Image (cartoon, rainbow over all chains, first blue to last red; front, top):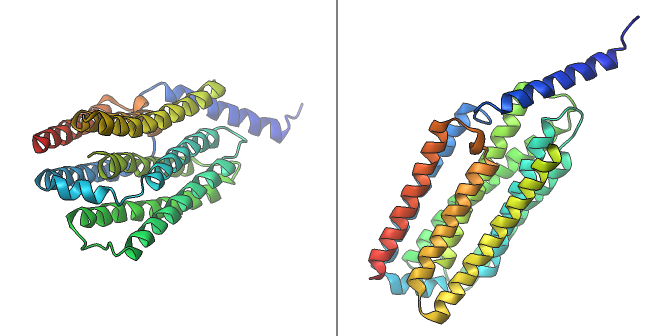
Length: 208
Length: 92
């Protein structure tokens, strides 16, 4: 009796899926090991940025507190919820992309919308500040504000481009291990963007 | 199994959004009660807690080798210690 090719492919998919689930029980780093060098490098760099900001703040508390009033906390809050939601979509996308026969395209499109919404809100915020005469050299607080949020915005732009590549890749019904690793690595980078913003929102917008 | 994971991720999202709201409420409560220093350190603790959850649950460090988990935990603990310490000394 000849076994249909579809059944063989289905069994191979099921075996690969079971193998992946078995592998999940063992400690393993998701994504490419190289991405973790970038992640920990960025964490150290932003950690230093946050410490430098807090030290500068402790020397001019009155100036920093007064300047903080000019920030739009509603936009800051909206951007936080947008990035958290976008991260959640990406987790679900990666989870689905490792299952045979399922696509994560819709989740990734929502995540991309999140990145674009964050970008647009930030540009709107910058525009409102510049229009009010508050530029990069207005005072120390705003120098920190533009520098830190600008570097973070660059991460958002890179992350959104990576999400677009991930969405294109997710349309393939059969993915190689290398492609799954790319999806996981891109997702980890996007979560880093989220993590850094969570700290930045607290420091720049909330801590007085 | 997949449904359980799906619900877990969404539950974590709800916790993170609620923690964000708690930060805002804490700031407001600090302004009203005149305890800004305490509320600011609390906000920093919430932010570090949220970052830890993102690392563990979203980035997948929960399933990572101990060395990765330890490095991340050291980073988050040191960051909170430094930020809260410098803030507290500056506020005195």
